[in-house]
Length: 300
Image (cartoon, rainbow, N blue to C red):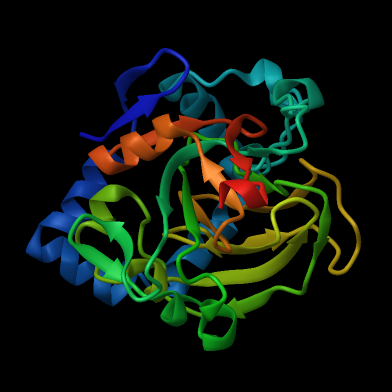
């Protein structure tokens, strides 16, 4: 059972986990763990399932998925009958009115929908995966020079569940560099898996890029794939100016994670999110909502 904090009603809720029984069995039983290492974490497994979800025959999964997780489809751009496949539905676009962007340009907004953890004054060699398990930003990026810039900075981890909107966006206006791609495994990023696999984010397939933002300095975006995520799709154009809230990319089927790193002294995260992180709970956020503020020189 996974509990998270709902900022809107200031209460804890229980997450509806897609494939929860299979997930628990895979990461808890000896047979499941063996199958995980031999088959499930491999690219072939996720690619094959992703191929099926791109086919029109997978449309039959859409209705039951919507019903089981009580998804509000009134916010989607397409009508239900217009989705060509399950993946087409999974990474669906939303109407512009569905996720209003906080109007204050100095407000730090969420890059997407999901469950958020926030850490300040980070130690590059002891980033928190879950309580008791850590990893290194150097290992995550495979680039020591870039990693060093974020020592004592801020780290945000946004976990996207299969039931969430699966597009991610820019938190500010600015320009973004080319994406660096790192091959890896396809472990789940669900908390159940994070408690079992050491340095999971450094094991999984991932992509990273540096975003030169107008208000928050150089922000590091790291997109992490997961089980059944056949592709991480970047839709932005490198070196071309983007607007706050503009789309950066999307994930195909599966739970996924985007991790942001800020240089020291750039942002202050909202107290409720920091408090819940300290208590061990993720905070549920939506694209465009305020999660922090730009720090001025006098506040550093």
